[in-house]
Image (cartoon, rainbow, N blue to C red; front, side, top):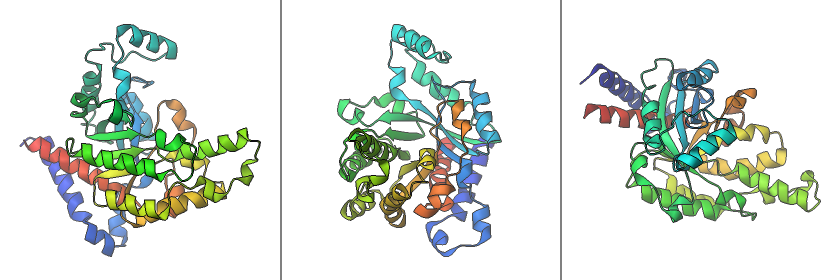
Length: 324
């Protein structure tokens, strides 16, 4: 066994020994909390591929200096399906750097480059893909999915159908993710399913001439109690997580939105559904605002213990892989 594999295995075993579920339920002492990555140290949705504004290590440096210690590096898988002409036009139109010029191998070049930063000693990085939920119907591109340590599912339909509540769509997707995870046994994250819902309600109100202050809590609600119970039954005990992204920091000051979101999410957290936190950063503008997940996670009952679960799983999987 090489030195790197030994170190990862030791770290994984240490974390597993420190955070067993039963121990979490019994322990509230400072020693446990001091052994966890805190919420503002975890960022499990950072775009580091085609839209990346800087060389990879410099990009990661920005997050490390801002306090991040655990980062999930990923990109949209669909961006790697362009032919040469489409790719060049897209790069020029968006004024991006051409980090992966070979369109036939770009998706694998991306994953390979993400692997090169795993040896950094200032931040723990993992690699993955963000895949649009509609690909369940259109057909999944499975070969590159095999290279991911995490697969995140970009939710859009569940946010934009304009009806309240909209939990049935997320439940439908959660069942599909449970199914595909049997083929790809890695942690999976349901990305940003909620914020678009709030924006859609506000836009509909504005178009009808309503003042935003007239929107009732019930119009913002995402789940019924029955839907919450069903989602808990699907996700509790699984390695499927729901993302709470930084976008909530701009909505949290609205007491009606805040109350609706707490009523939607707190029962899930208390029922055993697991969550992740992130910035969903695409560019340097991400650093224009502070990153403080505890601002909204505390009232939602999402704790560092909860969010560290996926880190423990990823370290264990990586250690097992490196032993082979």
